[in-house]
Amino acid sequence: MLLSKIFKNKLVPDITFDSYTTLPLDELSEKLNIPVSHLREKNNWVEINGEFYYFKSRNHKKILREFLGELASTYFGLPNVHNQIGEFTGWENPLIGIITKNFRTNGTLFKHPHEVFPGNGCFTSSYSFLESINEETLKKQMIFFIVREYLVSQEDRHSENFYFQCDENGTSIATILDNELSFNGTSKVYYNELFKFDLLYVVTQEAIKNCEYFQEALTLLMDFDSTKGFFVPLEERGLILTQDVKQDVRDHIDEKKDLILDLNLLKK
Image 1 (tube, rainbow, N blue to C red):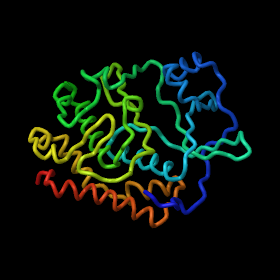
Image 2 (cartoon, rainbow, N blue to C red; image 1 turned 90 degrees about the vertical axis):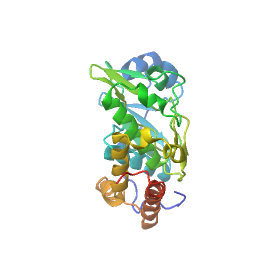
Image 3 (cartoon, one colour; image 1 turned 45 degrees about the vertical axis):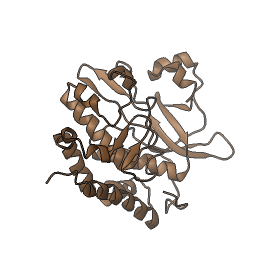
Image 4 (cartoon, rainbow, N blue to C red; image 1 turned 90 degrees about the horizontal axis):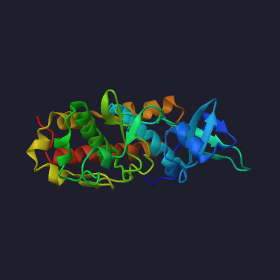
């Protein structure tokens, strides 16, 4: 999306605050269930009524991408942070952006990809890691997630913004975050640091093509309606897109669908 005018209306903040938390890093780390090393890089935490939120000052384009990414996750039945419009008023010129509640609750173990799958934790076009997943629920989640990432063209997926959570119910994909660099284009070969989704490769792999979860995810993708899936929910949250941006989003989704059809990946 290269358009300068994103929203028809002025963004109204859901949460307004004038200061960040001043807790020592070790204490904040314990409360958030996030390593201190990670907090040193990302310390825009806000405590509101005993709950911690993370604020990112962003332009309208990136704000929209975060909301679109959340809605795409919801459509595929995947967990995602709940985005709200935040405003920091502690400076003369207020900052607008995305604010999200901390999801890393204590008592839940979070793991990086390399801690769950052998090797370096990067899932390449071979998709051999799928064969190593014994839990059917996790396998379905992973396939749905990969197709979801393809749909939104997520360029910024890496081992520091993608986690698994482990509890008494087993291993599952943790809450998804960081969608601000999605919707940046389409390609038959879809890359980010963690995934290589090469449709030209997939079309040669019968095991992947015939996987019921893959076919189910593709069917969902082909059935996706931008108005119902994106525009109506956004308007319900007070985010009114310009017609040019709506068309830009529709074109992106249509191109993704066309690639699936061109390669005959969807079984009849």
